[in-house]
Image (cartoon, rainbow, N blue to C red; front, side):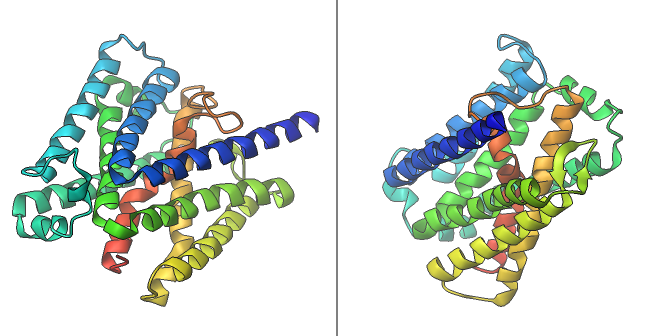
Length: 305
C-alpha cells in the first residue's frame, strides 16, 4: 500500500510539473510552442527506436528516422511559410495564412494529404490492434525492417499539431487545451475509476491493468470536462459537436491500446522512465497523437474556430 501511494504521489507531482511546463510554453507563444513540438517529436523517436525496438542511437535505423522526421517537417513548414519567414511570429498570427492556403491548390493538397494519410495510418493501426494475435510478431518484425517508419509516423502527427496551432489562430491555446482534456481526461478517469471500481478486465493480453469500468469512467469524465470547457471558452455551435466528445475520448483510448500492444510484443513496460509515475513521453502522448487527425477533421467540419 505504501508503494502504491508513493506511485500515486509521483504521478500527481509529475502531472503538476508537466502542466506547469505546458502553461509556460503556452505563455511564450505560438512560435516557441511549434519548436517545442518539433523537439517532442525527437523525444518520441528516441524512445520508440531505442527503448521499445532496441536499436542503438548510432545505428542506421536511428539516423534514418531522425533525418526523415527533421527533413520532412522542415520541408512542410517552409512550404507553408514561403515567402514568409518561419521565425517571425507575426505571420503565425496573421489572418492571411488560411485564405492563402485555400487559394493555393498545392498547399491545400499537402494539408489534406497529410490529414488523410494520418487517418489511414491510424486505421491500419486499428487493424493491427484488433486482428493480429498477441503472439504473432509479424507487424512488429515488419516495422523493424522499415528504417523510417517512426520518423514518418511522428512527422505526420507533429505536423498536424502544428497545423492546429496555426489554423486556430487566436483560439489555438483553447483548441489544444480541449484536445488535451479529451485525452488526459479519459486517461485520468480510466486510471481513477479503474482503481476504485474496476473488476472486469478490458483486454488482459494487451493491457492487463485496464478495466471496462475504468474505460467507461474515463470516457464519461472526459466528455463532461470537455463540454464544460467548450461552453466556457468557445461560441456554442451545435449540440452534435458536444455529443462527439465521449466518442473522441474513446478514440483516444485506442491510441493507448495501440501503443500498449506494441510494447507488450516488444517486451517493454514503458517507453522510458523520463516521467516518474507515468513512463516516457510516448506513454503520455500516445492517445493525443492518435486522436489528433480525427480531432482536426471534427473541429474543421463544425467550424469551431
